[in-house]
Amino acid sequence: SKQRKDEPKELWHLSRIAKGAALSGTLGRHQIYSHVADLAARAIQAGKPPPAEILHDISLALSLLQPWDPEITKAVGRFREALVPLERSVQSTQVGFIGAASMAGQRNGEAKENQDTFYTSANGSVACVAVVDGHGRRGAVLSAAARDAIAVAMKELKSGSSEELAKVVLRVDAELLIHQKAEPELSGATCAVMQVDGIGQQKRRLSLVHLGDCGAVLGRMKAKNSGSNGANTWSAVRLTEDHRPGEDKEAARLLAAGARLSKAQQKMPVPPGQQMDPANMGPPRLWHRQRGQAPGLAMSRCLGDALGKACGLSPLASMVDMDLTEEDVVVVLGSDGIFDVLSDAEVIHCCRQFIESRGAAEAAEAVTLSARRQWQLRGPYIDDCTCVVLFL
Image (tube, rainbow, N blue to C red; front, top):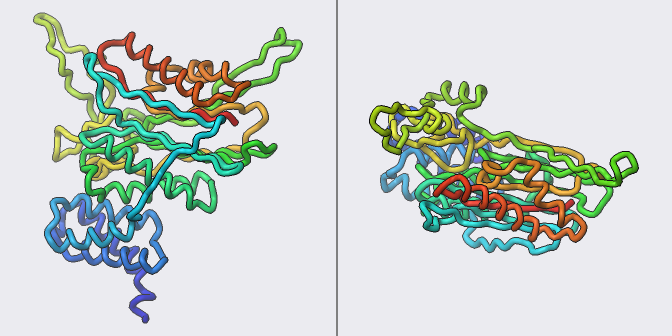
């Protein structure tokens, strides 16, 4: 019918109206929200899913409306059922050239919940890996849900380009924003997701996307020659740049969206006669203008965190595509628990001794152990440390 033919265009317009209204609070509990959720659910069930951008606008609008009234609750349930597969069995591939390690952190000597997760997969000449670093009250739940959603989506990819990976991340965020158990209003996750095509072949290509402060570094080895006393020459190439509120471009975008940026208040008591040291207050953080004590994020892009999305927090991933050369021998993805305490060169150095055996699991363990030792030297807090190593 003509009505059904017009639905995609209607959905495009209504999704943006719903998002804008939810951000501004101008429409209250208007029926537009349940209507747009049902339109999207119907399109997905008909095998014509809307673009990730539209799905994300709808999910964000619905997330910001919580608590939901009965009508919207039913519509969200129908939308969620269409959007998220019921069965998800995700298991990382165990192969020699891909390995991962993850260690839970500590607070004041006591183990904390590990909110990091990872995914590894190898299928023929294609390798897919991801690291997800959760935060917030339900960060571990949201991190695991993100990992599973990323894994399922990557298996269905027709192209491994960074543009397609960025769409995967956006679609995953749409799922997380209406997740039943992750409490996405104040729980979130950063991530790095990578696909390498041509493993074991002469022509290889790397595609990478990331949000927040999960990072990736490439290790290059120039073969030994007479001019370098017979030794191989190693170098580390950083592939990601952290998304932080203190960066000029990110700060300008956040402020334009209505965010407030400031350092967190120092929690430790200040001795009599001394002044508060600004250096101990940490990096600039993202705050909601109306909710002054939240969300307090030290990143400007991530998954989840609906309240942050209401003031500029972005789910749009940075993208990298590159052809690999014969000198490119290893790539490491890691959570900030790795890169906050180890330099890129130190991360690659941990992997060097395993280059001949291509023992990626051993290399990943060496990286995480080295990071953990550095945290122990710094004080009573140890962050979760997770990395994936891929020998190319």
